[in-house]
Amino acid sequence: LHLELIERRWQSTVPAPALTLLGDSIMHRYGDAVAGILYYGSCLRKGDATDGLVDLYVIVAGYRAVYGNSAQAILNWLLPPNVFYLELPVGEGKVRAKYAILSLAQLERGTCRWFQPYLWGRFAQPSALLRARDESTAQTLLHAIGQAVTTFVDATLPVLPARFSTRDLWEQGLTRSYRTELRAERTGRQAELYRDAESYYVELTAAALADSRFAVSPEGEGAGDDYRADIGRARRRAARAAWYLRTVQGRLL
Image (cartoon, rainbow, N blue to C red; front, side, top):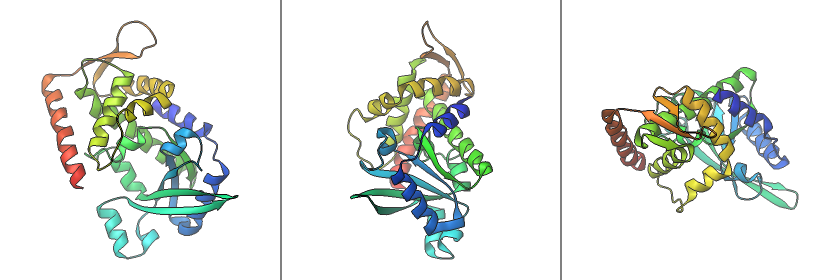
């Protein structure tokens, strides 16, 4: 069910001319190596690609197709992703972007099996599909993003109180994800992210919890925004330890 919500959100996002220019430039630069381009971050939330730095992920078939046999291909594989800057004129102004290059195989692993939340913490949040090679690739990307949501939810649930709200889930999960990186986020940032797409998060959470590996049930009356999770103490202790290790390891990486 949560895949349908993500796909519906993708379809409702109409690329602005500035985003189309960025996509065209990236396709011209990397050609057939590009499997898809994902759009996320603050410009997507604001709905204005010219107000800030556009965040893109360029998903590629393989690193050799992008870099040849250079050291960059090896480094991109060892410690993904590689990040680049792109600036283009748009009318009398300009559009600026940073784009990360990541292989499709590593996207699938990173949203499903990576211990670190670098990918599943990002792509559990709202995103948009800017380009896809074909419908089959679009579906592969959709399933990877859907898996990011599942991984995020299952990693966060055991560190929440037994009774929790959708807001608790996302604010706590995002807070813990940010702690694993060397990034400065002002106080209250997680609350802002949640408020920017609250209705979407409420729907997404209800759908994702139905597929969770934990026993979770709606709690109380109302719109189904409060839940109770039946998770044992040992599992909760293990989850807290895992997040501590993610913080240490993530900052080292």
